[in-house]
Image (tube, rainbow, N blue to C red):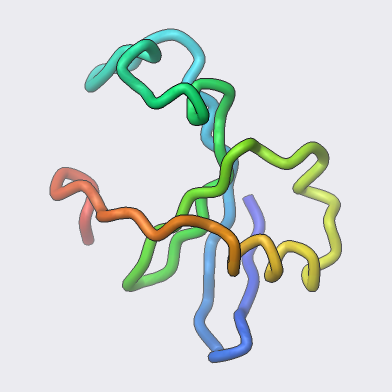
Length: 84
């Protein structure tokens, strides 16, 4: 997991999601094809974004590059189960 602050001063947690097999709420086959190999999740206090495919070696990217990836990630609606 990494953290970054965007140009607007918003703090983001960044982490990889790897949906290997099935979990308590869904099977891997129910995911869109582009998500089956995993994705990078960007999460702030008010937004959640996903980036596919999972960039190789994202943990070691410079913060400037990671912030650039944030700009290309897709905004998703938070699940009510996991909302704060």
